[in-house]
Image (cartoon, rainbow, N blue to C red; front, side, top):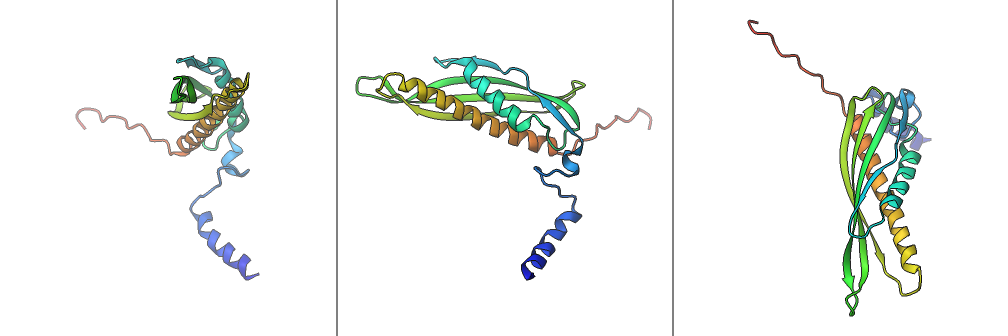
Length: 180
């Protein structure tokens, strides 16, 4: 009983400051509309397979951001450009790569249904994988690394979108007319 009273008193100041949880169901999400995510444009270099990571990234973004974001009223569209490459990290005695990184850089833009820019940003993540000696094991390791990379990128994009959408919008100042 005393714990409940102390917890209630500790949370009381938060209600006065306009605090609302990001993942709640209250007024923060009341006006949030769905976010559409079109196919992700992918540029691959250094032997990286282009479309697979983009597909995984879009799936994760649809799952985590598709229902809306607090601070974004109405529907919106999230456009993502993905650039990925493979960096060789370790080499075997015969100079064959034994450990590599998938490196992904995603530039994102969130626009309202009217086309107005809401927020934009960029993230960079990496996921490592080893080349195995068994047949086809390296393909499984690469696929798993691409899925991990997509999950890391989606998490970083989601965090940035929530932070940017939660920032107060700055009013555009009208210039004073001459003679005033």
